[in-house]
Length: 303
Length: 289
Image (cartoon, rainbow over the protein chains, first blue to last red):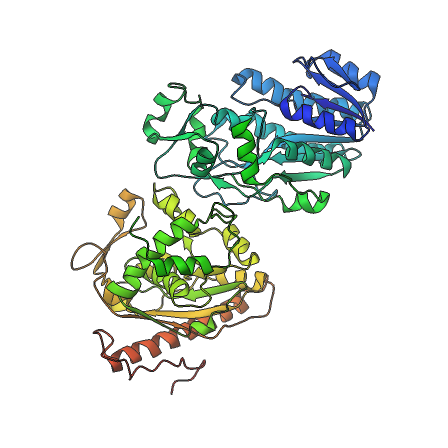
């Protein structure tokens, strides 16, 4: 199968690319970022997904399937830019895919779609609406992209669309939203709160994305790995130190003293868990994770 | 955290929950927190209040089960003592999981502790998930209406919600009717301050003759009746659901009546030397002998 990956130079994109090449797929990649030691067999196109050169790739190369991973978070991009990439980019990818006869699109979204709040349940299922978009505007563009991707299910019924809501990835690359939060030796925590954090090893995340492609999934699926652990356990096992900071002082403390810079809405994620139920995905694909919670945290710690 | 009672710690080890190497189950229930929590409850259960549990054999050893009980005033002392009896006096021990008020989950420390000992926010999603996972769920269909009972109403029942019957039907769960006696004597509420409650984020603040809603040393009893099962899938008409609700409510009412009578006859209010007069066999439904 001829597969196009957007955001292929990202950490998970690279692992997915290597896996698909190994499985014998013909591989194309689009990214604004360079990937100097990209594996042979991957044809790289240095393009922005919102621009004409990206559309040219669709028109001239006619991929059978697209894995769309070119989304960004508040850790890497400013608001206007995020909106253009996450929502504008996702729209373009689906429109190009429908226009140039792509049979299958896998959209890799995030479990933070569900939001964190005092009254949100543990183990969100796919039918739940996004919560707390109003209290965490920095996630609004990703939530919108997720919903937009889901609308492809009825707008482009001839195309198979898999919307994956993956939990945080963690592993030796030390890249990603959770890794950015845990980057320094000190990790902020709000006294009296210790929410569960759910993460999946990057290799398992890539395995899950490939499974969605192989099984030609059509629908919305939560993708998770091993069981979640409390933030305090996560901090301890990854060899960090927990710095209790009262909620009222967080805005002043964050971004200083080596603490991560976080938007105001992120405090909800330091008080309440976002935990997803991935039973549907496991049933549809037969997916099983290879790394348990302990191995995943250790892999991040000792990389 | 108070001192850990080694006997309590041994019970925690016997729990049949899937703990990982950090002593955490998939819901984040933590063995370390359980040891501290149940050592704390054990102080009230066996020393301060002295609670006797009857009919524990009516609670299945494993599999989905719903404990349905009465509230008897003040704070949810009854809930804490029922949880304690199922862990400390039942063999094998089971962790009863209650449905906590939402405001507790946004309260610092209470949020963490309740999450780590399996007392999650009272959401229908949580109830269904726990039962489908074959856990032991504890519900009080009277809700906050029940804890708001004043001293004279301590052994009465107020209106039951109907959600628990639909939940039991939907998940095929047996209901263990349960009565808690003595909560009203331990925390005799003379008034509930609703405005103060609003200020602190709680439904209300109960007031006792000694102001604070703290329990005085009292003997209490818990009666577990034989499990009740109902046929259906939870989509039944309201009239039928109400009929089932009334059956459970009536059964709990009988257990309370039996318990109150037992208490009067044996002067349970004060410690009794050997308890030889205690009628411990729980009557079958409708048996008023």
